Length: 139
Image (cartoon, rainbow, N blue to C red; front, side):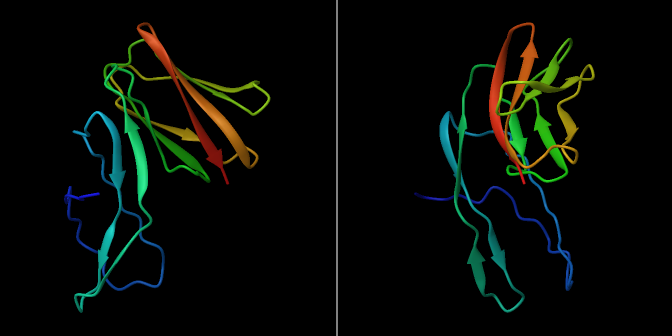
């Protein structure tokens, strides 16, 4: 796999705590895209994260979830205008456990997952033009 740099974020500096960074790739290629993070130290030494693969489908319903697995919150990136859209979460038994309307014009929604028990879940985005369902794991 030939990797290309998408972004370069400045480090938070010296810290004994955890730092969080995020970047949204707005122009992925159709099909499977591979991602990894290169972390460079001040002395020039670097390490790579584990490589992850994400599939991009150009069907107008490209919902992205992160982080996955999640702990307290799940960020849902939406593909386009969301008028009348709804987010529904189902547990492993297929029971609906969350129903959340999407604010009009939102391109990103935060879903509180802190009250979910650890396990496998499925998020479904319902739109007038169709629906998309994606799995996620609650740690």
